[in-house]
Image (tube, rainbow, N blue to C red; front, side, top):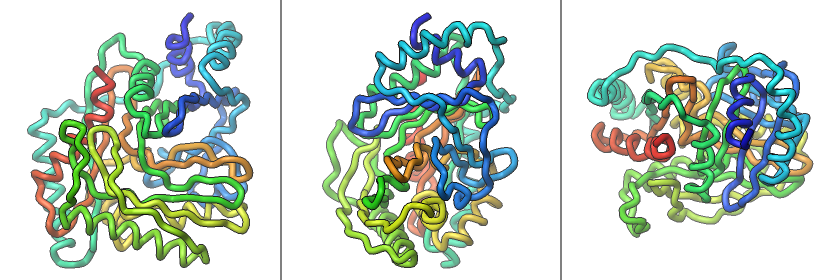
Length: 369
């Protein structure tokens, strides 16, 4: 049995695992938890003093809780991963095959999706134009039928090879089901006392691999909102930071404005508390944070699930790499559900924002082919 079949079999067996690669590295990492019982939490603060692979939703609920995989095995490099899985093959094969979580989705046409998006867009514009909010993030999902021979590992490998600038992941648990993602956005990264977060907002389509030299006022304002939010949040936590940016950063078929924030932490026992303070940033929610978060939950019209949540490894003593789960999709036996969103300001137009979600969905859509 080859590596692709073995990884796909892990999914069929409902195993708890994460396979990922960090940006600008060529080192795959497999984390596997032997037992099916998973630690779940309702708040990011519950992650204080914890270690493991985090998979958190946009809004924690009993259906979509914060998941922490405690890996019994952490294997680096393809050669070691393949050897380890070959040794485990007999165990996998002896278990009865299960099917990943599956649910029936109503198939809609592109025009129906677009009309639904425009209807929600109008609801989002009203409080913005009335200056109740400075910014809102509107997202949507799109369901694509899968070929019967579709391989989750095969799709992961396409992303692995195609998007070297992104954190690429394939994660499965009995609670979350199967997710594949390629995300450019760090929420918290570091070890011991040296830490980093980023402000990533503003989006332009990449034409012929040419990086844009000018950004619109809407995009610059959108990125400035996120940067100022991070400055104020870190300051409120007693953290002094230094900045690099904003600069243009490529992410798949689009580019963003990005600012890096670097800072020191005196202790790392309260990483969950810092995550709670930072997340969700205006890049995936809006401003003011609490009011826009509640507005999105009530008015967006669907459950984001683990889209725009948090994905990555948490180990404050050694190495933490936590990302916002963007450019992702949820895989079931018959379908892939793709997600994308964008920041909405009073200057935004429905047509432009719809086009932005299409461009963003090509990051995942292109690896389904």
